[in-house]
Structures are given as structure tokens and as C-alpha cells.
Image 1 (cartoon, one colour):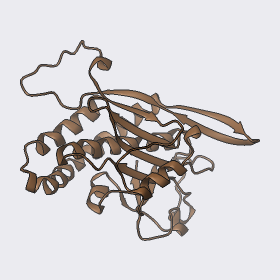
Image 2: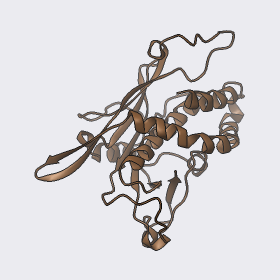
Image 3: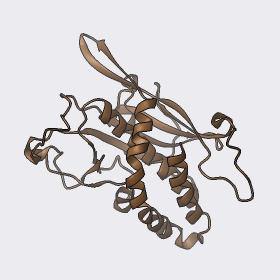
Length: 254
């Protein structure tokens, strides 16, 4: 998990030293400055996540279903000043985050807009379509993401497809971080939301291999356009070209 620790520690360094009145602007600026290195490291992190996923096939009511599961502890993202890391320490002993597929029943008490929570609960938890991050230090859920599995045959990486021939990717339907935190903590939570987005990219790599993840930025995606861009999302193609209709459609290319 050294990749994620490097990215998050760099962003936290900027945030915790920022005067409150400039914190939001500086957060976005620091994320943008990290964008190039994030893009270079993203593939390696997706590979790590693909190895941590459990994906199985099941049949419910006679229909085939793809079931996704992950439950992973992640160490503290940044080391406090004046302390020295012990490389021999067990990562689980200082875990700060727990990333997992959410189980039923519903998630109650999470401070986020109703539109995001309704879409999150609409996703099928039994199939692993709800993902969340727990902040173990604070004892609370930090971020949530729901997604839709796009059926279809895997795309052959060697086969060049025109934009019109491309198939739709898996689609993120809800993204939110809790809304009752300080700006610095929100910055950490946004980074962990990016981690959830990469889990969907890892599922893509194992299943349909579209090399893309889609996001329709409606009222269930509680991020600003600048935050979407900072997470690596760019305007996606139309429905005729392997995307989804609407000007608020974004994609993460992997």
C-alpha cells in the first residue's frame, strides 16, 4: 500500500498547513499538482486491488450474477512529524482505514445528501455493488460509492475498436464523503473515495476489460467538477460512442 500512502501523505502535507480561509482552493491545487504522478501510479494500485478482490459467479432466480467482495485494512496514510516508521511493524496494527463491500441493511446516520444515499441503497449489496471506507481512528464511515455492473463480453486489448463500436463501462451511480468534517479531513476522505473508484476499475480489469469507468455526475455524485477532474475523471463519449447520454458524463481511463 506504499502507492496510496505516498499520494495521500503528499496531499495531507498541504492541507494541514493551510489557513482555513484558503483551505478549499489549496486542496484542489495540491490535488491537481499531484495529478501527473497519480496517473503514473494508478495502474500499479489497480493491479494491487485486482489481487485483493474476490469475484465469483452465482445464479439467483435462474439468472447468472457476478458477485464482488473486498475487505481490506489500510495503514495510516501519513506518519506524524518526529516519529519513525518501523518497517517490521504489521500493517494491520496501525490500520487507519477499512475498505469493504457493504452488507445489508441500509446505512443510517451518514451525513450526506438524501439523493446520494437513496442511490447508494438502490445498489444491490448482495452483489457487492456498494463500497465504503471506514475511518477506524474516528470510528465512522468516511466515504461511500455505489456502482452498476455492465454486462457483456470482455473487450480484447489487441482489438482496436472505433468510438462507435466501444461498449459501455461499469457505471458509478453514487459518490459521497461525509459532510460533517473539517476541510483537512475531507481532503483525506476524498482521496479514499478515489480509492473506491479504483476498486471499480480493478473489477473492470478482471471482468469486462473496457479500460474505463463511467460516472454520470447527477445529484447522487456529491463532488464538484474540480474534484471530479482531480480524481482523474474526464468528459466521456456520448451514448452512441460507448458512453452514456448527457453532458454530465465522465470517465476514468485506466
